[in-house]
Length: 554
Image (cartoon, rainbow, N blue to C red; front, side, top):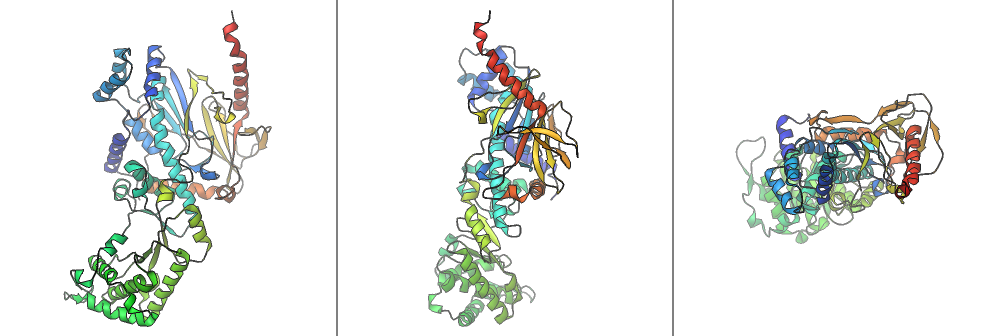
């Protein structure tokens, strides 16, 4: 799929502008911006970083997603007259009126953003995005950027875990729109689960906006809405290659149904007439896309028999049925039984199309049930996943944070009693160190002024999250993860389609060592500070302790 054209980009940018206007933020961003402005500090150059503290779902990695939405948000960031008037009504009445004039003229023309490429496998504590610009502006961006990255990265990572659990060959269908946290949550989920490794979505709007392949046929309500064959209209179907004369499709199917029952030793009296009527009506409407749900009543006694009869009738008229969907029961056993019947029909009726019929399974699938399905013998070709995918039931938030690391060229650090909440100061670069087998083994966080590590040259670094001394490593390959993507109000990196970003995800995950991709008890990937950055952290900690008595000075 090609990169998005100007029309697609325009639609996406309008979507972002409508979903994420500048007022979609926390009130305290404006009160801080006002205090900066009042103190004359609003134009001071400042740098913030966005990162997360722990890999999600107890796993060994995450995926970075949401960058493109961030870029489109920055490009369109500006306050309208209505925005400013609303802020005037909610901020304290003592707020200087000139501040609102300042807000009305604000944009991101002075902002620069550097980031890790979207779709990259990433790890806890590694800065994903660096935002530099005037202090008041980059402060105002915090909540919106977090909102755009947090869920996108979380649900994309969840999709990647489902893909790992399913294996590389099985098709995955995202169908969680009705269970998502609102329309925006559903749309975001459809986009980023596709990027994370799913193949299809049921969400039509996501297909329109992002070019994701859409899929879907019928629900149980369609099947149960029919009672008898009298409700089937029209009752005829024109064969593919034999002229304009229509065939009595109901009579053809009923004759084949009797033969199917005889072949399988089934009792015709247990077949549900309304279900057969539903299948016939749908097959006449979509003879090339016939894929019904067959468990509205009984798979073995009714649904499978009705499907085989209608599918055989379609084949006899030159059409090619697609398959069936199972939405309840034991998918392992049922899929094997269904495939067995398909093979019997293929052999008995000499219909080779039955050898390629697909079986779709959709029964409240979780990561665990997906892994179980993959570990047992089964015949499921496509798995549809909804609730557990889009709501991320195992972990509802990635927990990204946005922290100040530099003001006026001076490094800034949050020092907390909880070491996990302390930040790493200064502008940085991030390098991924790769071993001789092509697997990343360490992400090195350095000060931006440092020279990059060299291939084949040993270096000392300090792993984050432990008190261990420095370790010595020698990379076979060094990859710089930081790229400039937004400079002075302009997007400077090509925007990618969802399909292109999806390909980047698969490429990135393929390089990771299997021990870091294990769904249970993965090995911890090492993130480390360079010697100079470690020294800076130590120096600031000591300085903070020494400055604690400033009230007693002079």
